[in-house]
Length: 301
Ligand code: R5P
Image (cartoon, rainbow, N blue to C red; front, top):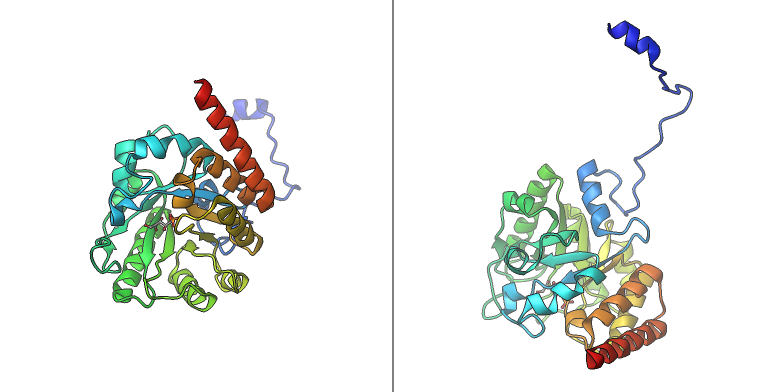
């Protein structure tokens, strides 16, 4: 009898204790999102540091087998344990990334042009069903503010946000800067703000030495920085330090990690800067020491 068994059970409703609040969320501008979206964002950004180290290796969709990505199975797979997020195309994911890596994926879904043509002429190349199948935590699209096909890239991003919102998958808006455009605070402030206003859940942009704090302040959702062309390791670590110090929530970095002299050492040094605020000189020392250790091990082996 239901009544009998209920009488034997000792219930513990604690009516006088208010329910523990779960509505506060650690990411800027994300408090009003639904549970699934927040959960995915909390896989991308560490709830402890509030930051992320995303490894970008989506370059092939524009550049083909560019330096450092000729063999992604050899250059990218060994880096996976040392980074937080994989940012890549579905082709790279399915062909070379083991599915048991347990790292969240930010899927590059815009495409349609190569370096041989006008790069802003993109479309959405992956449908939401495939993003779901691939367990994407977020989808990423380039937005060319001021570019020839600005309107189309804004439409691409908006369509993705609509589809992603239906499924609880976040969208990363990428500020793609045309060849002739200045990467200054005025331009980056405009581009990041437009992307956030369209509804992107986080924005990738470039670091600019002057006025980056204003770019961050004017963008109501988290910003991560791209690395750009390969530079000396100390310069890259300094840029990462300055960016997070001025409000960036991490990096979405490719060439400066996978083209470094010692890519694993670089990934670890970047992570120490991003998550632990390690100063650039110390991070560079860490990089050099790890590089030395790895070279020593290789010689012995
Ligand atoms: C370019 O093809 C992609 O948007 C890259 O993900 C982006 O440029 C970040 O990579 P990197 O740090 O090499 O600039």
